[in-house]
Image (cartoon, rainbow, N blue to C red; front, side, top):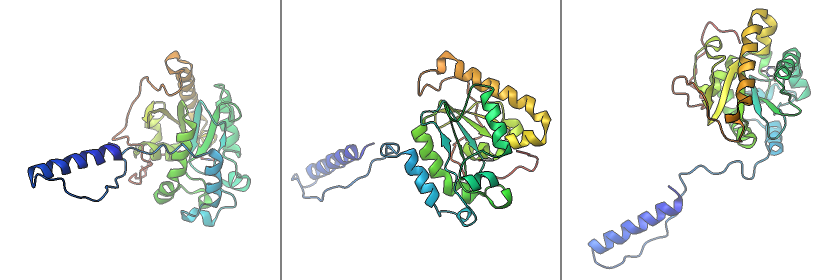
Length: 261
Ligand code: URA
């Protein structure tokens, strides 16, 4: 309900109560009521404004150890937004996402299905500053950084999201299920198709994961090629779900013991 609608309803109720009570119209203060509806956050926002804020951010302890924050990079109207875990040493020293060994492999994986950060992708991470010694980002760090990712998504409106690895997948889907169970299945995140796959660094450690990762990438390409999915904002299609799948980058997740990346 909008603020105006709420105000009208309250004024009507006041009128009814005056009529049923004294029969006269009473004096009342002006109502000041907020909308329930979400504001159009993308309205006055920009990728550059977000990047500036990320670089100045001190919302969590990761800012203390960073050399450079890594806001993300790519085109402003991407087919796919790729979401990783967090910057490593190479990213921390350059301020750019996925530029180390894993990043070079990611670029090759994307190129194999005609995706590229310079033409049709945007690449970012759930946390924008490097966790010390490449440890997993903690839930409070993911939560502190979540508004940046949300604002990026609101602007980019990608046709699909590719999460690489356990950490971003669990964070977005609000689940503790392992990546080997989540990968290769489409989920819905805020009305956008989301496909999880393995992190490229997992593929560097375990060659055996390359085959399933390739299957996942082919699925993503098939989804992008499907005529049903060609109009912007049309995210219809086969979609799965996990648990409540609130996509809250929720802080409730617990880390499963089994999982790699
Ligand atoms: N791994 C990630 O998850 N993100 C990067 O930017 C680099 C490596």
